[in-house]
Image (cartoon, rainbow, N blue to C red; front, side, top):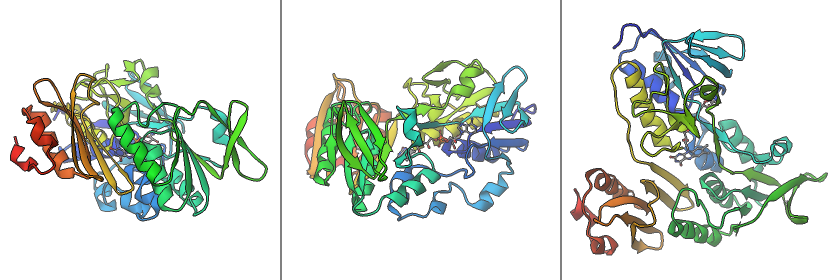
Length: 406
Ligand SMILES: Cc1cc2nc3c(=O)[nH]c(=O)nc-3n(C[C@H](O)[C@H](O)[C@H](O)COP(=O)(O)OP(=O)(O)OC[C@H]3O[C@@H](n4cnc5c(N)ncnc54)[C@H](O)[C@@H]3O)c2cc1C
């Protein structure tokens, strides 16, 4: 480990920050470790917020990434809840909203992303909720009572997961998506079609190509949904699931290279040698996009933490993300295949199937499994090894996939 590294600062205290802090100590870093967090609650995972926590089947305490004792052992110099407001790369300092200024030898930016709200006035409406934090989940949970009416603006992952949980709680759900299919930015049409059918079967009123929607709060406490000059419905609560804004402004204002998110190399290093970034805020070094996923935040942060200590550790993981909706566990591996790749559909049953995409040499390019975690595990190995796969066998629901182990 480099002897000159005695002060490390991490901005943010989510998934990426937690794993970076843990890794730094695990690798033997004994110097000062300061973590700045805008949230009072730190080091917790977000995926259950739209699933079990919202459904009331998981206590918020269960989201903690590490036990209280393990966190105490990390000997963190906490600054929370407070915002980091500026980075001075020349002086190697981070400025905080409370006037504190922290010097660093190495800095990790792990500021993640936040919910995008297309119309800022909506944030002033008591009935409008976004879902990013534990507080957001608690607020939304209180409103999801049986018989209530919920509108979801946005047919992406968060919107769909909220729809599924709300239906399980007996809430009437309408979902409005401006595009002409669900999750259009991240999946191929066949998965969009599967999701549409799944939600419609569960009673969600899905409106695709819905056009611009506006919200108007009434004196009676409900919100009206307006399209053009027409009121198209009234609901008790609106969830805005209109994508995320990458929280990269600190890095951008400090002069770091930015393209949608902070540009980093395979070691998590930004365009400044002392500043690293990981998680939602960083552009994936190979995929060229900010991968907003639990696994990416964890693994990119581990690699960045090791690299910060002078032990270069490459991060090139393919995209892997999951979602739970109703009885379906959906997992996706690899970036949505390009149009040229060939689709092999494996249908074991109505609720267990896979979309497998192959290149012209029959090598896996990407894959989606529904209720088939075993096949996904195998898919990760196929992708890594470049195994040539027999398409006919993949499509045959009776064929034993384990026989195709690389
Ligand atoms: C409701 C929900 C469900 C999800 N479900 C899944 C799922 O099923 N599968 C999956 O793979 N992924 C899922 N994700 C995505 C996954 O949780 C994120 O990709 C992951 O949390 C990113 O971690 P991060 O540490 O990069 O950022 P975050 O977890 O966003 O943490 C960043 C932290 O930095 C703080 N911060 C920002 N700016 C500042 C500042 N200037 N000063 C101080 N602090 C600051 C923020 O307040 C935040 O606490 C879900 C996300 C949400 C919100």
